Length: 285
Image (cartoon, rainbow, N blue to C red; front, side, top):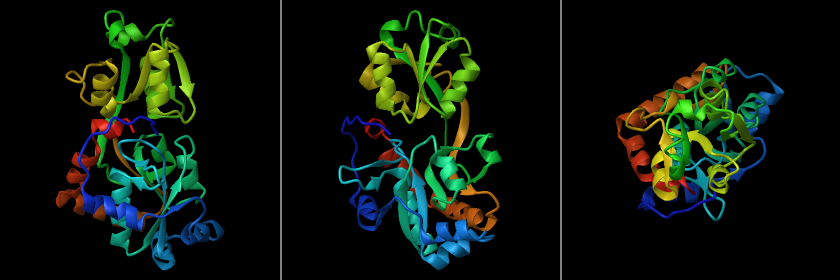
């Protein structure tokens, strides 16, 4: 979801080619998703395998997923999504969406699963199911280093004179509501990290709230200070597991994906993908 590039990291050709060769970008319904819309399927896994294709909802969110200049989805999640499709012996269609509507898209059958880095919050678990988490993150607050003397704690941010920029509907917005109830919130629908940075750099907002995993990139490139400090809270506030989303009631599909993720963790491929793609440079794509 970002529009910045600081060029970093070494890409492995073998992994990159998986996305370049096998990836198919789509904006419509798959046969399996359409089937689920037209008749209630109690076994979506069988429906997907019969159709020979799985549609996967994704939204721009570097470093986990972003598109190349040619429009191809790449990075940690898209590559892992491709591997899941191969594991299921089906093709894949990526369905581009925005974060404000990604859960609704799954509920209405626009895609079979959410294959992007969605936080498995308690509120979302009421309406969709989640796979086993493959990462963990929380929310951190960032201010210009030049304001570090006056904005140096959560208590100092919780003031009506402080404006906090955040993406509408994100878990970060929940964190702002909980920890900074007195602050003035500036919520940006489908905003990107570039939008949030612009808010702070321009002075429209004093603080931005975003995922803690972006801290190294933001601190090094934009000279921001992170609150609370990573040494004190490495996962920020309200840490939560990062996972994929599956429709409620699809226990067979959920179990199959969890078996896949468990194997990818055990064989070390998830760790390799994290090292290759979840970098400061890719965080600012």
